[in-house]
Image 1 (tube, helix red, strand yellow):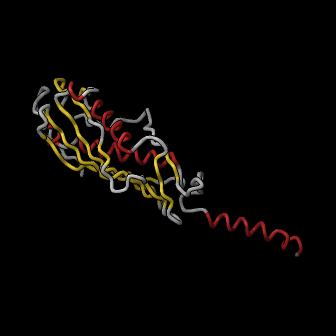
Image 2: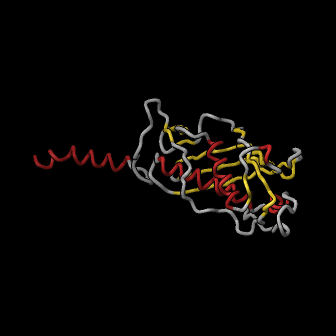
Image 3: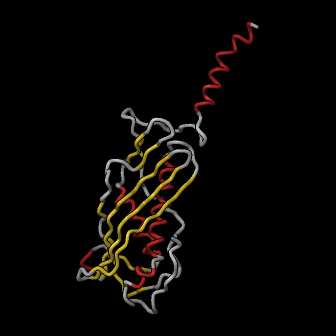
Length: 220
């Protein structure tokens, strides 16, 4: 009996530990002393391209992607963990606008559009207003990136305008920088894919490349 009683505190500790583990996993990282969880938003260098193969190649296009206007309601947060008491999530380095611009530029280039680094060298300018860039972590990670895109010609005339969104969901360990980055990346690429697959966006380039723009559904 004495042996059993001596082991009870250990059993209680194990039970408490098991009870504290969520359905995804334990917390591999913890917030700082201010109760905020910080995520590095560096976009992975090696990612599979989502640029649609049917996007018309346009060699006469010189496109400039303007710095993105961050118009989110709450500029301080990029997410929240709601498994227990809410833990706000913020970027540790790169801004959401920079992150999305990098993703958009990469996919536009992969689609065959020539990008230029100066607006005065462009005959098309893509202006983007970021509306939402957020991941909510509960039983799963759910991320959404939504932005308003406008394509202008060199004189400033708007050729295309639409709000486009992308989403991503996945399971993963709680409060994981890697999981947050992956969800933000996949949601950003999903939004860019939906932009590139929009037949109106393709047509807005006005036949600058050979052949007519191919129209196909965006899947939304």
